[in-house]
Image (cartoon, rainbow, N blue to C red):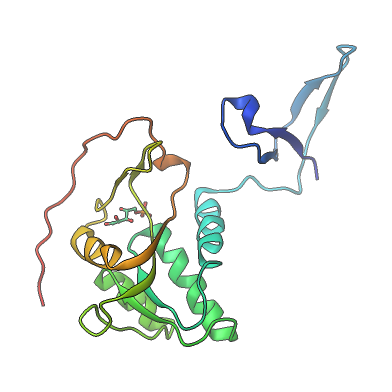
Length: 188
Ligand SMILES: O=C[C@H](O)[C@H](O)[C@H](O)COP(=O)(O)O
Protein backbone atom coordinates (compact mmCIF):
# COMPACT_ATOMS: atom_id res chain seq x y z
CA UNK A 1 0.00 0.00 0.00
CA UNK A 2 1.40 3.38 -0.91
CA UNK A 3 0.54 6.41 1.12
CA UNK A 4 1.76 9.96 1.22
CA UNK A 5 1.43 11.93 4.41
CA UNK A 6 1.40 15.73 4.49
CA UNK A 7 -0.06 18.39 6.72
CA UNK A 8 -3.21 20.19 5.77
CA UNK A 9 -1.59 23.47 6.79
CA UNK A 10 0.47 23.26 3.62
CA UNK A 11 -2.82 23.29 1.71
CA UNK A 12 -3.99 26.55 3.36
CA UNK A 13 -6.00 24.61 5.88
CA UNK A 14 -6.00 25.43 9.58
CA UNK A 15 -5.91 21.84 10.81
CA UNK A 16 -2.60 20.21 11.57
CA UNK A 17 -4.10 16.75 11.22
CA UNK A 18 -2.01 14.67 8.85
CA UNK A 19 -3.77 14.02 5.56
CA UNK A 20 -3.13 10.58 4.11
CA UNK A 21 -3.46 10.50 0.35
CA UNK A 22 -3.92 7.15 -1.29
CA UNK A 23 -3.89 6.69 -5.01
CA UNK A 24 -4.72 3.90 -7.38
CA UNK A 25 -3.06 5.76 -10.23
CA UNK A 26 0.66 6.37 -10.57
CA UNK A 27 1.86 9.26 -8.44
CA UNK A 28 4.97 10.86 -9.89
CA UNK A 29 7.32 12.42 -7.36
CA UNK A 30 10.73 13.97 -7.73
CA UNK A 31 13.52 13.48 -5.24
CA UNK A 32 15.90 16.27 -4.32
CA UNK A 33 18.19 15.00 -7.07
CA UNK A 34 15.30 15.35 -9.53
CA UNK A 35 15.30 11.68 -10.27
CA UNK A 36 11.64 10.85 -10.88
CA UNK A 37 10.02 7.85 -9.32
CA UNK A 38 6.45 6.73 -9.10
CA UNK A 39 4.27 5.08 -6.51
CA UNK A 40 1.36 3.00 -7.59
CA UNK A 41 -1.03 1.49 -5.14
CA UNK A 42 -3.44 -1.26 -6.09
CA UNK A 43 -4.44 -2.15 -2.58
CA UNK A 44 -5.74 1.15 -1.14
CA UNK A 45 -9.00 2.15 -2.78
CA UNK A 46 -9.92 5.79 -3.11
CA UNK A 47 -12.70 6.56 -0.64
CA UNK A 48 -16.08 7.31 -2.17
CA UNK A 49 -18.37 10.08 -0.94
CA UNK A 50 -20.44 7.46 0.83
CA UNK A 51 -17.33 6.03 2.50
CA UNK A 52 -16.51 9.51 3.80
CA UNK A 53 -20.07 10.07 5.01
CA UNK A 54 -19.99 6.74 6.81
CA UNK A 55 -16.64 7.51 8.47
CA UNK A 56 -17.94 10.89 9.65
CA UNK A 57 -21.23 9.36 10.82
CA UNK A 58 -19.40 6.66 12.78
CA UNK A 59 -17.28 9.36 14.43
CA UNK A 60 -20.39 11.31 15.44
CA UNK A 61 -21.98 8.21 16.94
CA UNK A 62 -18.98 7.85 19.26
CA UNK A 63 -20.61 10.68 21.28
CA UNK A 64 -23.75 8.61 21.91
CA UNK A 65 -24.01 7.04 25.35
CA UNK A 66 -26.40 4.37 26.57
CA UNK A 67 -29.58 5.79 28.05
CA UNK A 68 -29.66 8.88 25.84
CA UNK A 69 -32.69 10.40 24.15
CA UNK A 70 -31.50 11.09 20.60
CA UNK A 71 -32.69 13.34 17.79
CA UNK A 72 -32.38 11.37 14.54
CA UNK A 73 -31.74 13.55 11.47
CA UNK A 74 -32.81 13.08 7.88
CA UNK A 75 -30.87 12.59 4.65
CA UNK A 76 -28.24 10.34 3.17
CA UNK A 77 -25.64 11.27 5.81
CA UNK A 78 -28.00 10.94 8.76
CA UNK A 79 -28.99 7.52 7.41
CA UNK A 80 -25.45 6.30 8.10
CA UNK A 81 -25.81 7.55 11.68
CA UNK A 82 -29.07 5.63 12.11
CA UNK A 83 -27.46 2.51 10.58
CA UNK A 84 -24.58 2.70 13.06
CA UNK A 85 -26.93 3.17 16.01
CA UNK A 86 -28.90 0.11 14.91
CA UNK A 87 -25.69 -1.89 14.65
CA UNK A 88 -24.44 -0.84 18.12
CA UNK A 89 -27.82 -1.65 19.66
CA UNK A 90 -27.88 -5.07 18.03
CA UNK A 91 -24.42 -5.93 19.40
CA UNK A 92 -25.24 -4.58 22.86
CA UNK A 93 -22.55 -1.89 22.68
CA UNK A 94 -25.35 0.63 23.23
CA UNK A 95 -28.50 0.06 25.23
CA UNK A 96 -31.57 1.89 26.42
CA UNK A 97 -31.38 4.65 23.81
CA UNK A 98 -34.55 6.12 22.39
CA UNK A 99 -34.78 8.16 19.20
CA UNK A 100 -36.98 10.97 17.95
CA UNK A 101 -36.99 10.86 14.14
CA UNK A 102 -37.17 14.05 12.06
CA UNK A 103 -39.00 12.49 9.12
CA UNK A 104 -41.08 9.51 8.07
CA UNK A 105 -38.05 8.18 6.16
CA UNK A 106 -35.90 8.18 9.29
CA UNK A 107 -38.73 6.76 11.36
CA UNK A 108 -39.07 3.81 8.97
CA UNK A 109 -35.33 3.20 8.82
CA UNK A 110 -34.96 3.34 12.62
CA UNK A 111 -37.95 1.05 13.13
CA UNK A 112 -36.50 -1.46 10.67
CA UNK A 113 -33.32 -1.52 12.78
CA UNK A 114 -35.28 -2.01 16.03
CA UNK A 115 -34.27 1.40 17.41
CA UNK A 116 -36.89 2.36 20.04
CA UNK A 117 -38.70 5.56 19.06
CA UNK A 118 -40.61 8.25 20.85
CA UNK A 119 -42.01 11.73 20.17
CA UNK A 120 -41.20 15.24 21.29
CA UNK A 121 -44.52 15.28 23.18
CA UNK A 122 -43.36 12.35 25.33
CA UNK A 123 -39.72 13.45 25.56
CA UNK A 124 -39.47 17.25 25.23
CA UNK A 125 -35.83 17.19 26.36
CA UNK A 126 -33.33 15.56 23.98
CA UNK A 127 -29.75 14.77 25.02
CA UNK A 128 -28.15 14.79 21.59
CA UNK A 129 -29.28 15.29 18.00
CA UNK A 130 -27.19 14.23 15.01
CA UNK A 131 -28.00 15.39 11.48
CA UNK A 132 -26.52 16.34 8.12
CA UNK A 133 -26.53 19.77 6.45
CA UNK A 134 -26.71 21.20 2.95
CA UNK A 135 -24.15 23.98 3.44
CA UNK A 136 -21.72 24.89 6.22
CA UNK A 137 -19.78 28.17 6.30
CA UNK A 138 -16.64 28.95 8.34
CA UNK A 139 -18.79 30.36 11.20
CA UNK A 140 -20.66 27.04 11.28
CA UNK A 141 -23.83 28.70 9.98
CA UNK A 142 -25.84 26.04 8.21
CA UNK A 143 -28.34 25.59 5.44
CA UNK A 144 -30.59 22.65 6.13
CA UNK A 145 -33.84 21.32 4.80
CA UNK A 146 -33.16 20.71 1.14
CA UNK A 147 -34.04 17.10 1.83
CA UNK A 148 -37.49 18.36 2.77
CA UNK A 149 -37.44 17.75 6.53
CA UNK A 150 -36.65 21.21 7.88
CA UNK A 151 -39.56 21.78 10.27
CA UNK A 152 -39.19 18.59 12.27
CA UNK A 153 -35.41 18.94 12.20
CA UNK A 154 -35.66 22.44 13.66
CA UNK A 155 -38.08 21.32 16.38
CA UNK A 156 -35.96 18.32 17.38
CA UNK A 157 -32.60 20.06 17.16
CA UNK A 158 -33.83 23.11 19.11
CA UNK A 159 -34.93 20.76 21.91
CA UNK A 160 -31.50 19.09 22.10
CA UNK A 161 -28.81 19.89 24.64
CA UNK A 162 -26.18 19.09 22.02
CA UNK A 163 -26.26 18.97 18.23
CA UNK A 164 -23.68 17.28 16.04
CA UNK A 165 -23.69 18.17 12.34
CA UNK A 166 -22.16 15.56 10.07
CA UNK A 167 -21.03 17.19 6.83
CA UNK A 168 -18.59 16.15 4.16
CA UNK A 169 -16.40 18.52 2.18
CA UNK A 170 -19.08 19.08 -0.50
CA UNK A 171 -21.05 21.04 2.10
CA UNK A 172 -18.25 23.44 3.02
CA UNK A 173 -18.68 26.91 1.55
CA UNK A 174 -17.04 30.25 2.23
CA UNK A 175 -20.39 32.04 1.84
CA UNK A 176 -23.85 30.58 2.33
CA UNK A 177 -25.71 30.49 -0.98
CA UNK A 178 -29.42 31.18 -0.64
CA UNK A 179 -30.58 28.27 -2.75
CA UNK A 180 -34.05 26.80 -2.90
CA UNK A 181 -35.51 25.13 0.14
CA UNK A 182 -38.90 23.52 -0.19
CA UNK A 183 -41.99 24.54 1.74
CA UNK A 184 -43.16 21.58 3.75
CA UNK A 185 -46.71 20.47 4.09
CA UNK A 186 -47.11 18.57 7.34
CA UNK A 187 -49.74 15.88 7.70
CA UNK A 188 -50.63 13.82 10.73
O1 LIG B 1 -33.96 18.10 5.05
C1 LIG B 1 -32.92 17.47 5.02
C2 LIG B 1 -31.76 17.71 5.89
O2 LIG B 1 -31.58 19.05 6.25
C3 LIG B 1 -30.47 17.04 5.45
O3 LIG B 1 -29.69 16.93 6.60
C4 LIG B 1 -29.70 17.79 4.40
O4 LIG B 1 -30.52 18.01 3.28
C5 LIG B 1 -28.43 17.01 3.96
O5 LIG B 1 -28.78 15.83 3.33
P1 LIG B 1 -27.68 14.78 2.82
O6 LIG B 1 -27.02 14.22 4.01
O7 LIG B 1 -28.47 13.77 2.03
O8 LIG B 1 -26.73 15.52 1.93
